[in-house]
Amino acid sequence: MSEPQHPEVVRIAQDLIRFDTSNFGGGKANGERDAAEYVGAYLESLGLSATYYEPIPRRTNVMARVPGRNPSKPALIVHGHLDVVPAMAEDWTVDPFAGEVREGMLWGRGAVDMKNMNAMILTSVADILRAGEQPERDLILAFFADEENGGVEGSALVVENRPDWFAGATEAISEVGGYSITVDDRRAYLLQVGEKALIWIRLVAKGRAGHGSRLHDNNAVVKLAEAVAAIGRTRWPLRLTPTTTALLQGLSDLTGRSVDDPDALAAASGPAEAFLRSTFRTTTNPTMLTAGYKHNVIPERAEALIDVRVIPGTEDDVLAELQQIVGDEITIETVVRDIGMETPFEGDLVDAMVASLGRHDPGVPVIPYLLGAGTDNKALSKLGITGYGFAPLRLPADLDFTGMFHGVDERVPVESLVFGQQVLTDLLRSY
Image 1 (cartoon, rainbow, N blue to C red):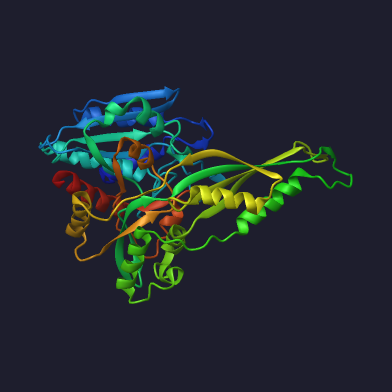
Image 2: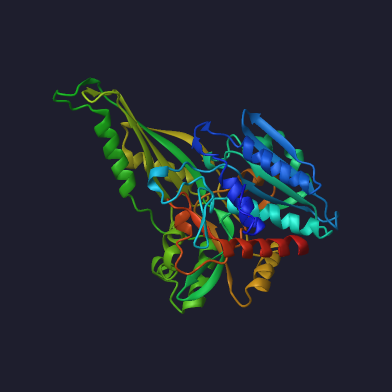
C-alpha cells in the first residue's frame, strides 16, 4: 500500500498506478477488473453502492450514485477511465507502475492520463461524505474501461447496454481540462469545451511476393512506405472553430499579441504550444507499421496505422483527401471512427467551474479550448449529455504537462493533485 505521509489523493493515485491496466488496443489489454474492484471497494467504504458492468472478461466498468441535497436538479456525471497506454520500462527513469513519489512529483503511467483525476474524484466525494454533507445535486461516478482504444469495449458498451446508469443526467465532467498553462509569464487555465473527431485508419498496400534478392518493381513495402511518408509530411491548413477563435482571443488578451498568426500566438504558451497548435488543424500521424515475415522474403501485403484527428464537421473531406494523397494503389480501411464535439463556453456549469478555480486561484483567467484528442464524453453525448474537460491542476510554468500524455516519465506535482482535489470538492459541493 501507499506511504501514509502523503495526502490521501496522492496515496489513492499511487495505488491506482500500481494496477497495470495497459491497453494495447484492438482488444488486447491487461484489463481493468482489479482497478475497478479497488475503486468499488473505496466507494462502498463511503457508504455507496458500487455497480459493475463487465461485457468482456476483465474489461470492467464501475459506477456509484451519490444522492444530492437537491434531487430536482439534473444529475452530474463525473467520470474517468481506468486503462492506460502501455509503457516501455527500459525507456523510463523509474518503474512506470511503481507509483513513486520523487522530489515532490508523483511518477508513473497514469499520473497524468488519468489516474490522477480518478483519485481526485474519489477523495473529493470522500471529503464531502465524511463531513456528513451531500453534494448539491446527484452525482453519478463512473469509471470506464478501454478509453485508450476509443472506448469501444468500455464507455460505448456501457452507453449502449446500461443507459440507466445515467438516468437524469444532462452534463458530465472528465479529463483534459481545468489545468493551468503559463502565457508570457502569466498563468491561465484551459477549460475544455470540445473535442476533435477521431478516425483511426489502416493503410493496406499489396504487391507481388518474391525473393529478397531479386529486382522487384511491385513491392508492397515500398508502396506503403511512400504512402506513410506522404501522409506524415502533410501539413493540414488552419481551420478555426468558434472555440479555437475564443482561445486565440483569450491568449491575445493575455499577451497583447495579434490573433492574426495563431501558431505564433500559441508559441507564447511555452510547453503547451504543440498541444494548442494541434487544435487549429487536422492532424494525421503514422503510428504503427506491419509487413513481412522473413528478411529475405518480399511480402505480398504491408499495413500501417494512422491516427487522424479531424476538425469537427470535416471528416468525409479529410478521408477523401487522404485517398488522393496515398493514391489508388493504397486501400484505406477505417478501424475506429468517432464524432467531434463543440459546445459554447457558457451556462451554469461553465460558470461554476470558472468560479471554483477563481476561489482557489483568484484573478487568473479561464479560457476555453478544443481538445485535439478525445475522451469518453463522446460516448455520453449519444445520450444527449454535454461533456466538459475539468481535471483542475495548478502547474509549474516549466512543466511540459501536455507532453506527459502518453509520454515517457509521466509525472504530476503532488501539490497540483492537492489543489485539484480542493477545487473539484468545491465544485461538487456547490454546483
